[in-house]
Image: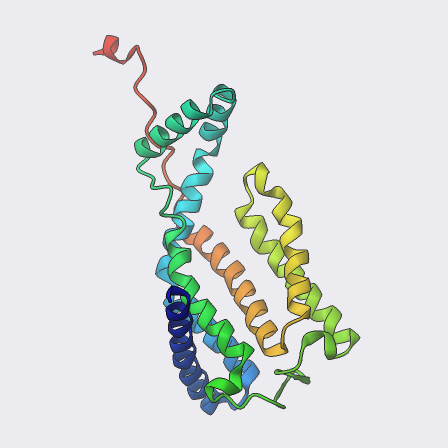
Length: 235
């Protein structure tokens, strides 16, 4: 019952996205460009959540030396380590779930967009047979010829690598820096070209957004150090 409700909600979002896509396509008369413009529009609409997520990431990056120090100090005591990490988060006014919330808010919209581009005709978007950069938007990437496949796979892998490089500051995440680009390149090769256009443009816009926020958002303060035993002697 719950899964059926989720499917209906995503379908409703896909219908809204179809209306927006058709409106923009009526202006530019090119579904490929329309997909890119709608993707950019989504990035702008979701920018406030992206800013929150980026601020959390920057603050978490500042805290990494303290977290690693706690992990080293309490590596034989996981319960105490968890307690100390929670106290550190509390002192620094950080909610460990706040970094996930913006992503959770974005997911329904992206799933709706994915559903629309996977089955455009179902939502009244006549994309079959239309081309962008000489490639059919409704045809699987791997069926569009060797050159197109190589170019699209390389662009996907590089843009995903750049994106992952921004969030893989933790050594435990370094493996994903290389696994995700290969995985996404393989997935993209199995998708209709229209969906690949969305994925590549979304990733590239994500990289641009990251560098823009890095430039305009100030680094967070180093935070509050716990009071030491000598603090009372200096009064």
